[in-house]
Amino acid sequence: MMYSEKVMDHFANPRNVGEIENADGVGEVGNAKCGDIMRMYLKIDDGVLTDVKFKTFGCGAAVATSSMATELIKGKSIEDALKLTNKAVVEALDGLPPVKVHCSVLAEQAVKAALSDYYRRRGIDPEPIVGKIEDCDACHI
Ligand code: FES
Image (cartoon, rainbow, N blue to C red; front, top):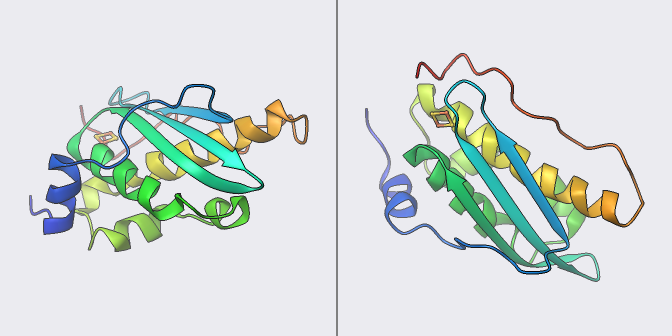
């Protein structure tokens, strides 16, 4: 399996790893099949994501994609962060092997789950934007 240099870099030196105390939004998504879990923490001031941190218990591609996702949304507005797609994350990493693309979906969903939590806490929208990834055919673990 071939990984791009960027994927290897973000796997070896993931950015924004950790937790945010008193985060304004926390999102956790999991893949039931492979058991990978991703948790995303957001600090939001005046509609801007001033800090983003994550913890991923999962495969290397899950670590790399969540790392890249945090870089792509940090400093952005909520509106821009909501537009983050797994495709954009994969592109920013110079691609992923096809069997690993689903790992980037986890990153997109973790961001959206955290934003969803932010809205829920503020009483804006009680409905979560995303649920859990229950099934992933690409995970053969
Ligand atoms: Fe990477 Fe399932 S999320 S193997």
